Length: 365
Image (cartoon, one colour):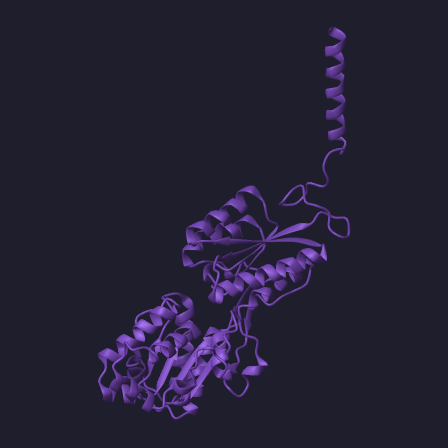
């Protein structure tokens, strides 16, 4: 019996000796530990890609493009990329703090849910884990980021104002602004819009007089509701005089088009609006707007669009998330990237819409 116990003890000692000499798992160095080897035999570095969870709209497209890029990265074999979605800011905060505490990522690419992540992003910066921010940039940590990748939000506002001025907008003319929310994105879009107005002779008082609806929350249904409420609250003369509408998103513009086909609107006010020759500006690149511009939308908006003076959308491509991931890959490979990486905008209308790729379902006849 003693010999049996002695044999077990000797076997245990030998197994521990083998582990100490490296006979166990592969290289455990780095932030993630136990990584599978990359194509060159070294441990793969892990890239966590954190984005909001959504099944439609712009954020839904971001998630799709992120997953597409992660599959491409993983297929190349050098890095291990994982897309992590969050339901809200609290969920995303928990995710970031978990990966800091448990060292489950060597690099992070993140679209912050909102500015409530500021304290957590400071922890990420202090952890030494390199990170790229995308779209919603938290200024207090941008100096610590590998890159802050974003569309040109001020450029969206500037391009819209320039288009309106080319169409005849004069200082003091009525303009209706339909903003997204109270984050930095609408603020920058409004700043770009107002800066161009000021450059073209608008006074501070005239700019302060710009009419704005409540926040749409980037929602089509809320945009439809707020547009309907604006019509109801306005006189025929006020509606007719308002020939320029700056919506912050294609979903909002689609809400306006849906409202114009609704029986909820007073017919006289609807006719006043359609007779005004409105220039309707939007942004992002939603496939539905592109379908409308092409005249192929399954819900025929041709009668309403024909009575608009102009309909256009300024690009804010959700595929920019792939650029953010590429910036991180370049940095990990030892290359240099622009820390403030702003992607320029384009104006899309019926004349050039076929040159652009929209996001979301193609809604055609």
